[in-house]
Length: 184
Image 1 (cartoon, rainbow, N blue to C red):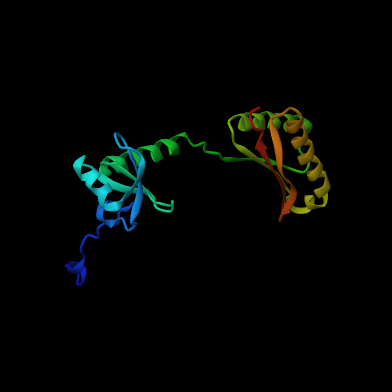
Image 2: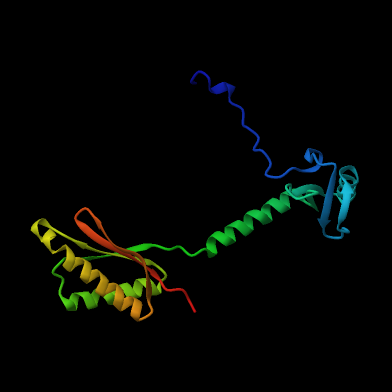
């Protein structure tokens, strides 16, 4: 056994809300099922919660007066966690897909990559297109910028994308970012 480990005690996780006697306000607005919504002194609100066999939970501490709900606290936490999980599951996950060009990319290859970009944008992903310059091809930087702008203009004109960032130099690359066009 390592020295010092025997002193560890499991720490109680602090509650996310103030409940019952931990509520510090003098008056609270009480809400809940089978409860008349009104402002009550904390003692009266606690009695109402205890009579119902439930907890008094402070759900909006910054309101004047603070809003408390008469509810089973464990059940309330469970429902909150369930809602958060559901929101997270329904959130759209957006990725950035990359399309690479060379400064001398042929027109047929550009059309092929436009087809891929359309597919990515329809799925709701962003597209980062860039021209990579190798060795002496760096002298064709303007050709790369023109290639990217032509690529972007086709996607914008056909209503698939909107330009998120203009062509910018990043070392041996020139890149642009396209985002999917919002639904109308």
